[in-house]
Image (cartoon, rainbow over all chains, first blue to last red; front, side):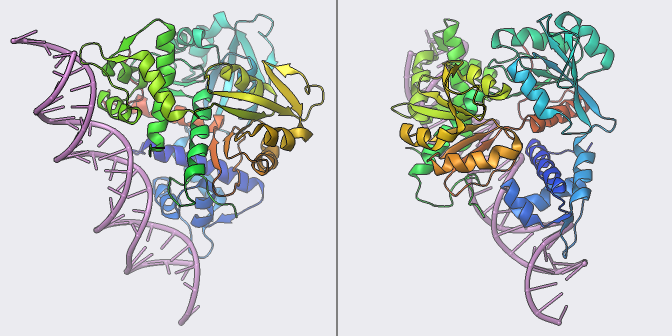
Length: 223
Length: 223
DNA sequence: TAGATTGTTAATCGATTAACAATC
DNA sequence: TAGATTGTTAATCGATTAACAATC
C-alpha cells in the first residue's frame, strides 16, 4: 500500500462521492477545474491527488468519470470488500443505516446491535439487529474490523472496549466522549455540537470580513 | 475579532468539549500534557492554542478548568448567544436535537421544520417543529443565521436556497450532496459514508504499519 | 531549593500553490 | 494549427514542533 497522507484520503473520498453523483447524472467526462470547483479545492490539488490513483486524463476531454471512480476505489477500498458493525439502533443508528445503504459496493454495515430486546432479531433498513450480548461472537465470527458507535456518551467507552476486544481496529464514534483505545486502533469522532459551533463561528467571522478571498476555500461563490 | 485559524477553532471546540466533561467529573485543574493526551495533540500545541483565549495557567497547578471554558467561550461564542434552525425532523434530525440538547448555553436549536404536517406545531425533544411553508418567515423573524440540513439529498439544495434567502450565513449539511451557495455563506459537510470509508482505510493501513509512531496522532495509546 | 510547568520564539516540517513543458 | 488541459517539479506558504528562559 502506497503512503497516502490522511488529507489526501479525505479528499479522495470526497472526489469519489462527487463522481458517483456525476455518474448518476449521466456525466462521462470531467475536467480538473470542474471537479476542483465541486470539491472546493484548487485544480492543481485535484490533479496532484490523482497521481496516487494512477488514473490519467486527456487534454481534450479531461478525465473519464468511471475510470476515476475505479482508480480511487483501488486506493481506498479493501480488495475483497469489508463489513462494519453498528452499535446502537436508535434515531442516530437508523439514520446512519439509511445514509449508508448501498452507497459503496465495497463497504457496508453487515451487523447492528442494540440492548433493546424488541429491536433484536429483525432487520432495520436492511441490516439484521442482534442482541447486544452476541456482539463478541458475531463480530469475531464475521471478521469485522470497523465499528460505528451510535450510543449515548455514558455507554460509549464500554462499547468501544467490547468492539476492540472482538477484533475491531477502526471506530467511528458519534458519542460526545473521548474514547481510550489501545495503540493501533483508529478513532474518528463526529461530534454534532462541535461541528455546529464551528459553522456558527465561521459564519459570524465571514460576516465581519470584507468580501476578500481570504480563507481556505469555504464559502465559495455559486455559479 | 482576532484572526483565529480554522484548525485552531476546531481544536478550541474540542478542548471545550473535553473540559466540560472534566468539570462534570469535578476536576478543577488540568496540566497541558493531560489535556493534550485527551485531545490527541501535543502539549505545546495546546499551550499555543490557548494564547488566542488569553487564559493562563500556573506552573504549580496548571490551568483552571472553569477559566479555560470561559476563555474559549469568549473566542468561540456569540456574546449574546445564537439560535440555529433545523430542517428535517426524521431520524437524523431528532438525533441532532438530542445530541445538541443543552450542551452549549450560547448556541441552541431554536426552530425545526418538516414537511410532514403530522409533525408540525408540536415540540420534539424540546424544540418546536414548524410547517415547512413558514420557514422564510420564522427564520427571518428570529434572525437565525445558522441552519442544519437533515433532509434527503434530493431536497438539500432547495432547503439551502430557502435558508440562505431567509438570511442564514452558515450551513451544517448532513445530506450527501454538494451545495451551491453564494459567496459569504459557509458550508460544513458531514458525510457518514465518507467518514466510515476514512476509518476503514486508516484501520487497514494501521494494521500494515509496524508500531511506529508515524502518523498524526490518531490511534493513540491508552493509559 | 529542586523539579516541573508555563509562555513564547525560532526552527522545522509538510502541504499547497504556482509554473510550465508535454500533450491532446 | 491554436487553444486548452494534463502531469509534475520547484517555490511558497503556513502550521506544527522543538527549545528554553521565566515562573511557580
